[in-house]
Length: 365
Ligand SMILES: Cc1cc2nc3c(=O)[nH]c(=O)nc-3n(C[C@H](O)[C@H](O)[C@H](O)COP(=O)(O)O)c2cc1C
Image: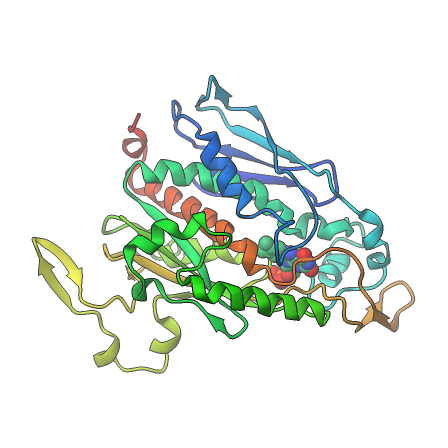
């Protein structure tokens, strides 16, 4: 398994859903930066299950910092943090040692790890691992904020219910996003989204959705083409989020059937600044930021674990079988994934900034 990521900001995640803890070791953080615990807690709360439309697993997400912090400030040594797992119902997963959940990691993981992988709660494949990722992302985001860089995201759709896009909303709406029960730009749509999730759950089903994200305040020329282009770096991180099945930069999907005359972004000087009059390319050209807001959409499939009986296989008896799942699951992962997307983007941008500016970037204090 690959549990490590990053060149300059180096992350190493560990733990499994039903073992004693999950956690992360983070190297490459700036010494002296003061940890804003209230901000971290609020960020983590937006990912937590136990709320309307989410899994009823209840975890406080109270983290324990083992090293790297002294008197509230980062020491410069790797920051190691753990989240203990407290609300595990491991019995719900007993049948999954033999019966493979359709659309989950169970079957390829069974083959790859010779049946030794911990299936309880999805083991290392669980979204539980995203709690420490959100911790790292929120910490890094608070550093980015001191440079005027913002990383925003909202639910763009759940099933057929669509929110506004960033470009259609007022800037003031961005600030309110994280004070709402769930981050949407148009409050009118949230009730319909939650109703869609409720209906899916009550018919023993799940539903997919997408998240739109925007990073603003980036300088021109960030990114390391060829292989560490901005798109490659960010999509590597986004595709590491369980259930993420697509990443579209700017208007990439529409552009693939459009014309240059419609989708080229014309340049203009405005008050001495270079801008583009449209932003179909989502703020990235040639793998480098171009100074316009970086825009992308991350697509999430419907949760694999549904209560409706499904056809599957029994890997012990080598027979076809039926699976009737019990246990607690998210009927729609998008409700919890907005902070995860923001965290991953912050991590990627931060690493690219360190690649470009190195220690200079760290001289904030
Ligand atoms: C926030 C979040 C919560 C999730 N909750 C569940 C869940 O309750 N049940 C489930 O089967 N999958 C859940 N998933 C998705 C699975 O972890 C994922 O589909 C599985 O590991 C297979 O990986 P893949 O879909 O990326 O191929 C969740 C994903 C995220 C991001």
